[in-house]
Structure formats: structure tokens, C-alpha cells
Length: 152
Length: 85
Image (cartoon, rainbow over all chains, first blue to last red; front, side, top):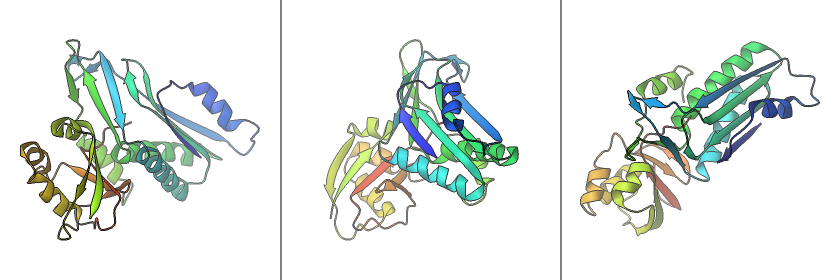
């Protein structure tokens, strides 16, 4: 069970391999990758910057992961979230949930993302082609997605 | 009570500072009371901390509700709703 906050890009294949290496108890691995889209609200994006709260970011991601481990029988999990300046098409976040069977892995991966999106202290700023920046607003749909898992 | 405050995203931009240390009177004992106290410090503070429904807080790096006590807290952060993932 691990969380990482980093500026560097990640390689999904390498992370899966590392997570499953020399284990035979894992029957299902589910991954989610979040990427930077090049268009936001109809306008072209030239870059995105991810700010975070060092210390609380890792702590909150660990709390989210611990919550998932309480709810599902996971053999392993991983959350990697990038920070700093990212270009359209770049990886932002990776969530991996590994379990003996697929139901727990699918559900836990979705839960980890829904909780991460409402609790982890990151803030996105989008920069348009003219260089002007705008902070992304939190979405009501994310709040609703987190609530459906019960008391957050 | 002396406490370190940290600000993020547009809260930081509007206040023009990433952090500061303040001394609050004993009567300021909750997150909500701290926000009201901060709102009185100047125009930018008023603009930010009057947005009570929007501004979120963390006390010692844990999410905090407005009614939460700040007594003994070392670090309190204020920020907009998070947008990671």
C-alpha cells in the first residue's frame, strides 16, 4: 500500500509489474489513469499546473487508501499523483487496486478516485494560449460521487 | 495564541502571501471564529474570508469543519475546494 506525490511521469506497466512481482495471491489488478485534456470548457489549454499542500497531501492520500483497505480485501494498492506543470495529454494520477478477485479491485479503484477527488489537497490551474491562468472550480458531480460511498 | 497560517491557490493569490504567523485572542477558538477574525484584517482578507461557504480549512493537516476547535493548533490552512485527480 503506497502513495507517492511527485513531479516525474509514471509508467503504468512498470508500476503494475512492481506491484505484482513475486506474488501469487493477486488475481485481479485494476488501474485508473487521469490525464490532462487539451480543451476545457470549450477553450484550448496550453498547460496545467498542480499545486498541493506538502505533508497533508501524502497524509490525506494515505487516509483515503486506509479507508479503501478497511472496506475491501485488497492485496495491494498504489496512488501516484503528479504535481507541477503538466501539458495536455500528460499523465496526472494513477490508481492501482489489486485483489484476489475482480469485484473488490474494480470497486476499490473507483472509490479511491472518488475520495481522492474530494479530499486530497491539490488545486489545478489552467493556462490558456494567451498565458492567462484560471483556477479550476470543484465539481458538484465529484462531491456526489464521493457521497455515494457513504459517510466521507 | 500564536498559530501559523498557510494559504493555497486563489486564497494565496488574493491575500498576496503563502503563509503568516498570527496571534489570536482567546475568544477566537474555532475555525469559523478565526475566519471572521481574519476577515476584519483588511480588504483582501474580507474578500476571501467572507466566502464562508466556499473556503475550506485544515487544522494540523487534517480537514476541519467550521465548528472545530483551533485551541492548541500549530498550523491552520485555508484553501478553495480541492480539484486534484
